[in-house]
Image (cartoon, rainbow over all chains, first blue to last red; front, side, top):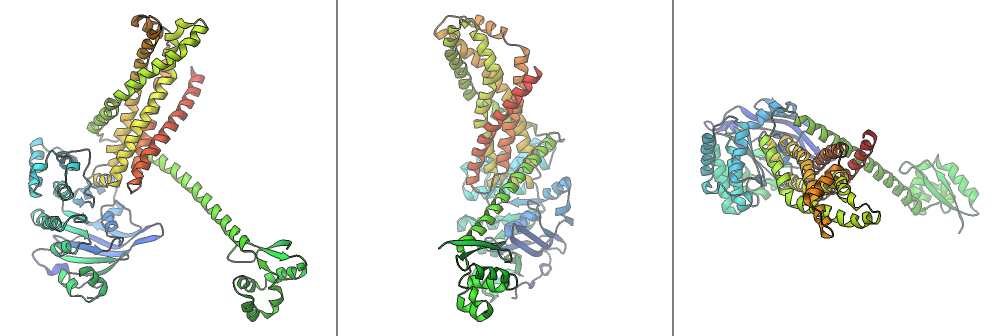
Length: 260
Length: 339
């Protein structure tokens, strides 16, 4: 596999992945001071696809998905989500786009001062205003059961383990039925067993909620089990693109060092 | 060896060089200076390379080379001067950027305060956090404030034969100055540091980002509610501290005397005018706003590391305390002009 050459198109998987790009990034550039983190990065996320973005620490993976939800402004290029360039949207339009995107943070980002229930209710009450208390209650129980933590309802985040926090964070993300999921290193800091459980959950979420996902990771186990397509970032540019098999067969030393 | 110096302004890499020329070779040195403009590359290279190298390259300048010694010290000093200038420019730039940041932050808070969706539940929660949870600390401070002021003032008033003025003096002192300032300083410590640390840790653990991507305006939810709650609760805490201070003063007066509670209070309040009370209440709103704004600004703009949480909390307390004193000074001047 040659770097920077798409070896497998997502459209080659009929029935699972659609032809419409949900997210289209074109020539994205982002610098912090003199350090250029992203340099002309272009990629597309197809409908229903799980796209894994691999790369070493500091290669710009997290910056990439933060640009998608405009937590960071880009220095150049376009980030199009559902056909809208998020960099040029006003606050209300951006809010509408964000409502369709679920973002799982690397640190889980649960609100420390709230219980699990309040954490789950928080986005629900803001995005789906006017929902009855019974509906909210049902929805909270549903997502908690989906992530296998039905008994953690009244616990505080400080009482949860790392894996449980990730699950609750995932539950908080999927509670508003997002169309796109962005996972920022979902298995970082977890043991292999819990990492596998999170990977399985990611696949289940994709099937159940029909989401398209970008999974930022440097965990090869997670990439293998979740990816429809893999993009590797290196020094702020797209180094290679393909599916798991392509990456495993490649003789490229940079990719091989990752996949061994 | 005695040395003279002259400056050549022809080098590209450094703005100037001081050439140290030994005494007795001045004419040669002067010639060197004259040649400097036309043989700039020679002199530049001559500084870096051995005389043999220069001899090969520029034979017509050989005789100047041994006498022209550019001091390494001068070079270092010139670079150091440039670095200092750059550092001071950076400091000035940082200062101006901070002022711009603070101004934008205040403007954004003001804009969000009057936006359509007000987070009333969070506002009430913050009022409870700031008000109710500060009560024990403010109670103890208020009582001790009145007690100490009475015990300290009593001997002096006895000396002047004005001990009957004690309740009035304590009440006026507490209401006009001591109550607001001391309570505000205590609040700056408790509330300001709490806000700085809480928002700072939320920033570090990406909770603010999480709020933003779930279509919640963190400025409206976290900052506006806290600033408003502080603006409203600090004046109430100050009034509470004033009342307890006067009660503490009554206790102090009874330690070495005998005065009824009713008599003490009626004497105290007979000396208080509206012009004592109103400016103190007005400035206490400003104290609350300053404490809330500083605490939130420091926390909201904390860095990414865990160390920045401590820095945010610490700087929030220091800056809020300082600003409380500055606001008090301005308020006293304004009060003096108006009342």
